[in-house]
Image (tube, rainbow, N blue to C red; front, side):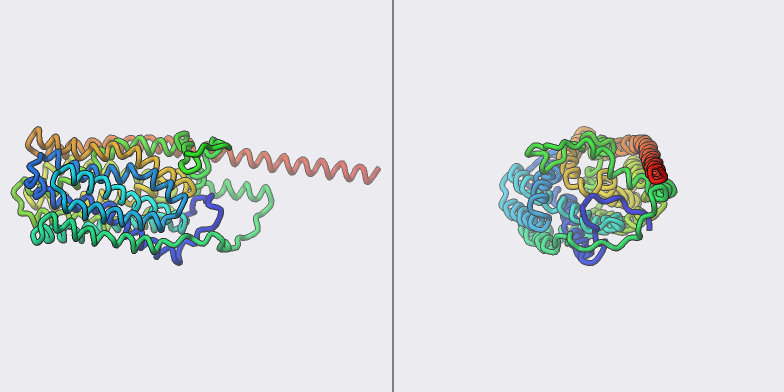
Length: 482
């Protein structure tokens, strides 16, 4: 098992036990958070015809919902830090349910923007961020695996909702479907009830007594290759924290904007999120545009979700190996680049069989990226700062999340074809993929240098302590002999 990152939580995470029940709750909560906006694309064509709106206008529905989910991140962070994950997730489930029920009575597209987009999106924010945070309190060594399993909830829920939504739409119309979905999403309240706070007073596992000062320093040098990054990624730049924080900084750690790894992650993610959701949102409409029947188009989402479901736990297992975890940021960089390649190739694949091939490879790429998306952030800033970090990231990312699908829809309106939209999304993923490779190479190099400096400083401190002790012993002996 690879070495775990140093924890500043003040206790030893259990890495199991009730934590696996919490992972199951997070599986449900995260599943609805990410799958719900994608699954609603099944209703786009019907809603578009009912309200007589354009591709760009209907795309705002998922876009506002996703943007509200990300914009609600800081509010969710504050509530989690104050009340814990359990009540926040349960309130989130109630909000999404309320939004969907109110939307079923909608008479204008603006009504849907408000109910589905704004109210439902904030409810999803209260489901997503607390679920990610509580996993970091229960797991340390097995955290990549736990995150990978929890993130698998998204494709599992999408795989279920995609055909279900098509059946609901054919049977009850979009209004009746929204009313039923308002009841289904209450499962998030059950998921939240499972998120019992971790027992921070549990006794940590006994460890062997440390060797002497010189031996301890030598041991650090010998093991630095195995755990250099996981140690440094959690400890660096904490020295910049202010001793007297304002009211806001009590809940949100603004010193993260001085954290090198956090800034690298943030800049790259702002770009990639312009092309992150649009290919999924427009997958079924793209197939229908090419003359594919509705059920076959909806089945593409199921194929995508099934592949996504398969790859996420595998990604979590790979990310937890001793070969990948010390350099997990490179794995993330590859996943971003791979997504871009899939989107660029998509318009070149002809017919329904081509769309099936794209759905499979895109599912692999999307699943890898989604399984790593928050794990690499936690790897960079540490579990103790993750709640604040994810809140800051999501509020900034809500801009590209909000604008991405409508801009993509505008390209469809202008050119009357989806291929230019997929080309644009591919570029938005390829560029940050290359950026991440370069910047993480730089970051790892700097962390290695900083680690060597710290080890050398500790060695010097130990040597000085030994020399001082020898001098004192010599003086004592001299005085005794005198």
